Amino acid sequence: MTLLTRLLRKLHILRTPRLGYLAMIADQHWQEYCPNMYRELKDSGQLEEMLYAAQENTASTLKELKAQGMSDDMAWEFVREQWIFLQEEKD
Image (cartoon, rainbow, N blue to C red; front, side):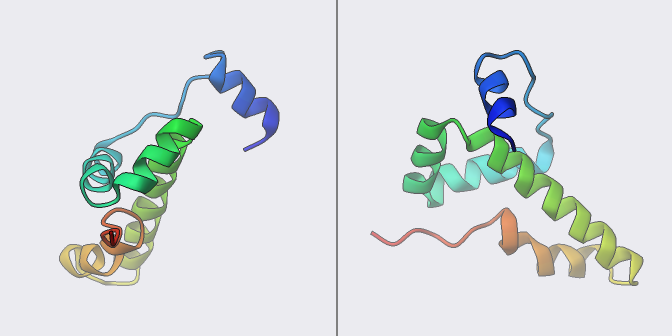
């Protein structure tokens, strides 16, 4: 994202891309299991951007895997921990 885009988003001139179901799942998981990362992203204004990226990367990879013949369940198992269910932070 360019500096201009970030500035315009902060000024609310450009809307943040729409966050869907996958982003909501990531948001809940990150809040509970990655609270330090979540707080840093929120404080820096990057949380929505990262949630959107996790959502899009997950959806794109799921689509690719299913196109290669993988079942929905297998594709989800393969992809979910890459961007949505991140590993729990250690104290």
